[in-house]
Length: 101
Length: 385
Image (cartoon, rainbow over all chains, first blue to last red):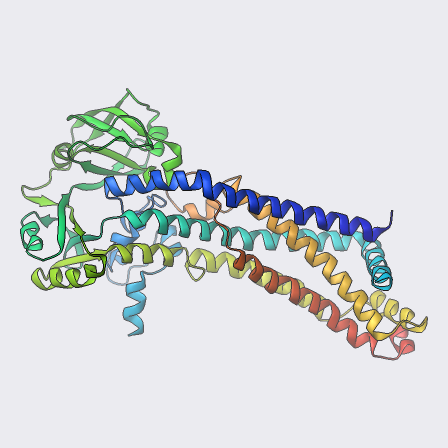
């Protein structure tokens, strides 16, 4: 078989696979995703949750939205941030905004 | 059309002739695309999910700060807040953190009051009387407990306190509840030893969403040591955390982009002697410069398109079917309890096109441009060089 036919065949197969993955994901978002989202929203509404339970290593990484402006450097003035997640969490928009002002 | 296919055929033969080198390029290129796409898929999915579910968070949370730090809030602030028009239900909340020396992990303990309706994401029941609790999947796993078992925690007096596990949050709710322990409100007050008349913070319901900022401003004026946090601020925080400019995204994204630039730069800085003499021979046997450029275009397209599609497929499967196992250790930090990612596959096609544009086009350009320089030169001098 000619090489270009093999290439076109493989590329077509990759595109088809990608299309199937995207269509399946869109379908999952509509059905299972929506149901899960409603259940999670119910949890948030009834328990009054404010943050995602991603980083439990420090107060300000567990609840970034509730942290005060100094928590990352709370040990002493100019203390170096020591939790790895602190380098992942970007500064709060309000802090960045204040700096720009 | 036939002419183009024949040039493509020749390009494929050239690629096959240097199969080990090109295979290595495709592997590195695909991996780079996979890392870039994984970050974008993961961050977009988390960002969308956070924005959707946190839209049900309290309209306004009132904290108290003292010396720049979060401080317990006096319950009589409720009366002051109630004085604002447009304010609905005001609830003092009692919650805090607990370090479990047994497992080395941190839990969040939250008090609930009154009878809550049944929740889909809770197996078993919510605490209905003192001494009962609901635990998150991470807590249950760390302590190896389930519904009906006992959870022993050390209270503020240093005494062990036994709670009966009445319910457990399902694994699907991990992203919200992994480290959570729900107790009755009175149990939380006694467990942490809250001073009389103090709460952790106060949630405020606001009837008209457009009034949130005004009411937050009025609360701040009436209670100068209060710090009101609006729902919009909570949502914006997560938008910033998972923004491409945030630490994680920028670190991995730039590392992947730099490695890709090295790959493209290596291609762009010149052709090997073998490639140059091949161009010279093609010119000598009658190929036009445009034919040679088309040949190089096909060579670049075959490698970059194959790598791009393979990288995208790998990223999709990695993030949405294997829970981003390669990225998870990077994101995890020192968290002992970390939720398993069961992400809802929100995909932003715009991001896919951006990755394609940032990687496929430069690679094709870096293949074609040095060839163009060789193709416009005299065939004999090219062959001799």
